[in-house]
Image (cartoon, rainbow, N blue to C red; front, side, top):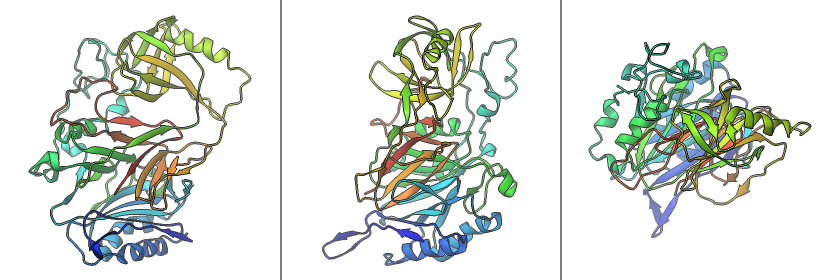
Length: 425
């Protein structure tokens, strides 16, 4: 069984090559058959091939390691295109549900457009911040992470490491960075530094990425990132000069367990004091009121809201009742004056709503009770993993000031049930 979706722009009675996006997916239990079905779907509307064609591939980890190792070569050879992608927990069907299978997004640009594949890894100077950042109660004397990072100490910053990362030649050779409007990528969980430099170099581009599934028990690799070569870590992606697009983020299935409280004192990613007392004891008091309430998940989350009304949701990764602090799952900085509300997952079900017929990208965070993309179309491309996704909004100016706040630059999200969608026209 497989689903087909495609997008063809018709102008003056003939096919227009302007921004041709084609989505294809298959749930065939044979990866070879599923790949062939997707390739045949993509081939049908193509009038000619182009060396600039690219295909983004997501494949569920239900297939064998040997078949997954060969999918990049097969797609490259049969579609004459550049390939990137990753292994995911599930792909997303046209109904919004998560299923096992293959999902592809093919792009054939107009002659004056471009699509540039790239890879950024540890060899480019990327550091493993999440592997060493557990609690991040750092100080100058006992900081056991100093051998890995150089910490930038500002008025409130305890989380930002000075980056020496270098972008690959494929990206630095782009003559006009402002022409890049979309960067689509797949990665391991160490995306923070790459996001920061992409925000700096390509501020006008929307960023959208999915964290791949961890695959050590599938093929011995930490992650399986697809491209001309298969990488076990890093970021693989494509920089497109197409149309302007803006990601939309949804956090479904969360229910407040506390009032909205103002942050009075914090350090880095740690909330120390709220308007009614220390953060840990206020959270404990809120949870005591929830005793007896049915929950599908015992994890805690926090919605942080800025004075301008922007909000981000993070998982609560730890607390210390003795010190009164609560740590959030972010490598960015919180600030006094921001509002916070603690949340948990609810048992309520959510159904997808069909809102468009345009090709749509959807990346989601897997949860124990499944995942449903909140906005669907007949032309879906996407997947879901426990690692989640990253997203960044296009900025109107050539340069943007990054003060390290949770509200500047691109954002990482691993909150179960959350999703990011983006329409392609």
